[in-house]
Image (tube, rainbow, N blue to C red; front, side, top):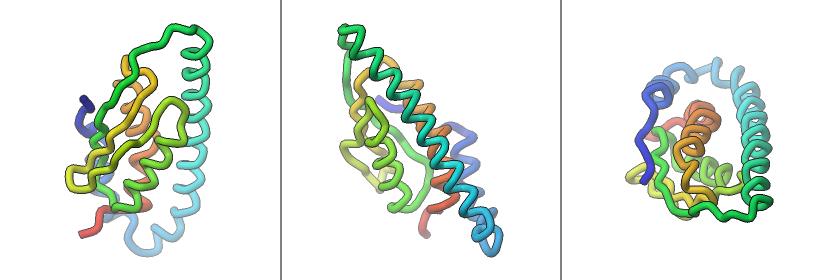
Length: 136
């Protein structure tokens, strides 16, 4: 099913708590939100084009469920990640397991699961980890 965290995402998220403490978090917050929003819009456009191709080809690829193991972040961050994934064309978050830090996803094209999960990790996780660090 889904793969583990990329080393870069895990390293970034673990260290993000220390980089965002104090005034720097307040100064960077608007920039991080704007960057996350832009990445989300671009991701949705690309996913929309892929979904349109699937529909227009009239050859249904194998759909299926995969597990996305997400980087350490708060429950709020995980919920926002699940919402962003669900709002992206071709993907839906079915369940969020905060104990195992996994999101069960339904993908319209399970054959592209590796690229889809990599895109979610690359585009969403780093900024969500900075905005919503794991609660201790």
